Each structure stands twice: as structure tokens, then as C-alpha cells.
Length: 92
Image (cartoon, rainbow, N blue to C red; front, side, top):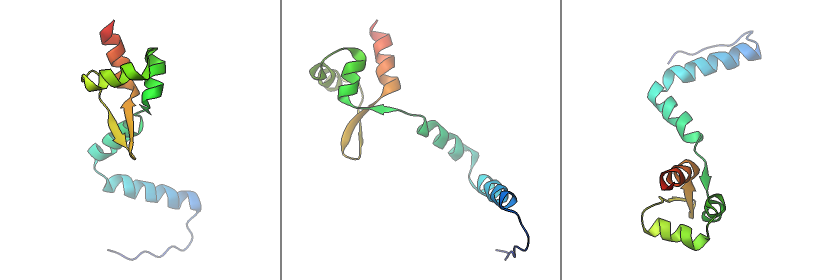
């Protein structure tokens, strides 16, 4: 690795150069996967019940029957809001 000496670089130029170096170092596929993952909204079973206008028990039954998929995040059960909405559309 080459050693660089910064003599008179303004803050904005330095930040921009760092961003370019990082973007070049990360494969484009990884960047796309990350941006897709950060847009995912997870909701609780209670929020799912409110969204579907059903009881929490019904949500639990849908989960047990495989109609809704769950994800464990930091020890709590969550559902993807997009998947819940999709299941609601398929039900109608």
C-alpha cells in the first residue's frame, strides 16, 4: 500500500475521495443487496394483527399453518410487512 501525505486537502474533497475508494472496493452486488435489505420493514405479531384486523391468536395460527413466515431478530419474532400485505392480497 502506498503511503499518502495530505498537505492541503479540503474536507469535502477528502470525504469524496474516501467515498470513491470505498465504492470501488465493495462489489456492486453487495451494494445492491445491502440497499435492498435496509428497506425491509419488520413488524411484531401485535402490529400484524392490527394490520390484518384479526386477533394475535389468529396471527399465531397463520404462522403455525405456514401462511405467514417469521424471522427471529434479537430474540423477538418479527414478520416482514411486505409479506404480510402480500398474504392479505392473496387471501382476497
